[in-house]
Amino acid sequence: MKEKKSRVDATDGHYRREHGGFESVKVCKDMQRGRGMNLRDFFQEEKRAALAFSGGVDSAYLLYAAMRYGAQVRAYYVKSAFQPEFELADARRLAGELGADMRVLEADVLADPNVQANPADRCYHCKRMIFSRIAEAAGEDGFTVLMDGTNASDDAGERPGMRALRELSVRSPLRECGLTKEEIRRLSREAGLFTWDKPAYACLATRIPSGVEITREKLERTERAEDYLFSLGFRDFRVRLLGDCARMQLPAEEFALLAEKRQEILDRLKKEYAGVLLDLEGR
Image 1: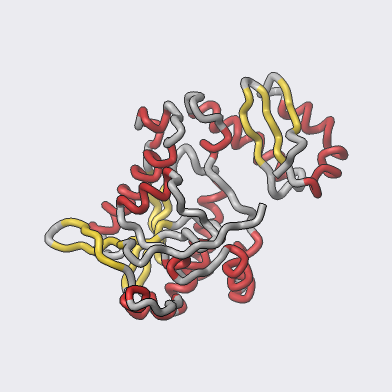
Image 2: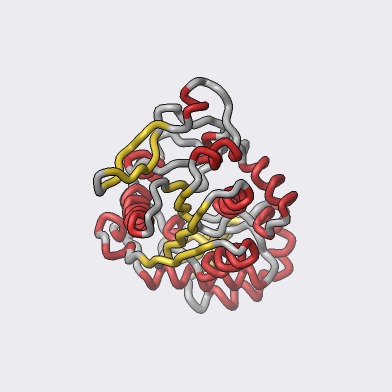
């Protein structure tokens, strides 16, 4: 699918701590005057920032850029039932390689009934919890700007998660500077970041159909299944829950590997699923 490109509205805001709380202020003055902005400009204006850090391509490059341009930045990773262990491992590895300041927080996302019930706007409630947790920690640490890795290829629209970011006034420098996913991968490769070709990854909750209750058992079962496929050499895939069956989504170029490993996969996944299905539409 072709990625959509868009730029942030110049009226979007960001966190500024004043009078004991956070309030929204407008984005970079250059954007308000209608001129372009790059990451160097951004970090010249915002010299201290907290980063919502996932260990993925976008937030990894943003962390690198912040340090490259001399900003004081702290990366906050939120560990929850929705994040697999490899994401935390990647985040720690990247922070270690950069010598970055990283803090790991925890959030019990399933404690929120609006998340556990898995309604169509689940992502809104989850993002609201996660980013509120980061904002609280960042405020305690003395940071006045909170940013995330949303890029210019991300379709803001009315996506529930994006609505939460707008309400919490989270800053998105990659988006503001017009950097697309393709450009971020290229720049990451030039910078020597191991994340440059990391496949896009959505949280484990996205494997469970909307309206189906999310439980820790379902999430852990999904993580085990995807870890197993990764160990076989699959790179860009999903194992989605359909009833009590595993519905595998793979790009067409990985179908040959699937045919080769078919029986192994059936033997392994049928220990935990009633059936194993292949989505021929792929990814």
